[in-house]
Length: 120
Image (cartoon, rainbow, N blue to C red; front, side, top):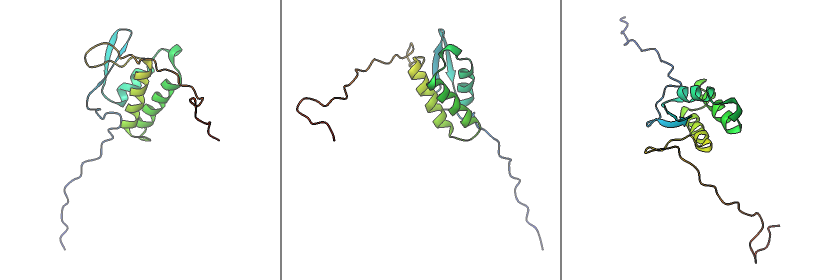
């Protein structure tokens, strides 16, 4: 009885935190523009974020990056959370220039418009 030799399998390499996002995100902090290529870069950036500016959105982005590094959520979800953080804080840099600024949105009233009845 002959035993066939199987090709040696390569060991799986844990690449969590190193997946490219395609196009790096550019963020600006104190006039210095950085490129965020992966979840590890995003987590490193968040660790350097000023303590006095850390809020709910910051914690959400940091938790998402930590969860992606621990393979608990997808890297794309963590990058989405970091991108949201960058947009909200106004540090996301557009391809052609300075950080993007969100325009203020008008506050809409919760009262029904004239002639409409309020829902029951």
